[in-house]
Image (cartoon, rainbow, N blue to C red; front, top):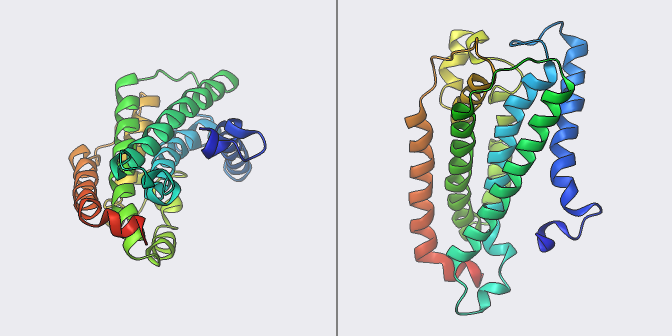
Length: 238
């Protein structure tokens, strides 16, 4: 925690302030453009239910993908392995993401007239899927970025549209059928749908496939672990 957040002004508080600020600013911005959100009456809550799982995935993925580079000095010790580096970064960002989620959701529900009836099971499921997908993709990216440094720039370019393609601002059902056929293959869209199902009792998405999200995470994790097991020393000494 100290090495990750200690160098920035405000330290660990920025982990909470940043997503809360993004939700408030963008939520208020969209409320000025549109009269009502796709679900409920609060733009801030609607955006939060999409942004928070997306941010949870993104934070874990980004942190895990750079775990070997971040912990390279520690990996010089024989007792410290690449598994330790990956798990340490994952646990820290997972714990931070959960704390941020609870604080932001509690704040939004307190200061908005949402009257939401929460389904804790669906909310926990969405968070677990976001964490698992972030871990799987992060481990694979950790290996690919270590073997091919240019992959970091390539990944940043090809995933930039995810912010707009993950259902943060809209519902999957409101999109044209042609767009739906494309968006369906984005696992984050399924996670956001599960999260919104947990906040809105009137919303029951039919497109969600938990097995698809798990498959994406498992396949990424399998190949990432395979590559790191084989090439971890080459990556560390690169």
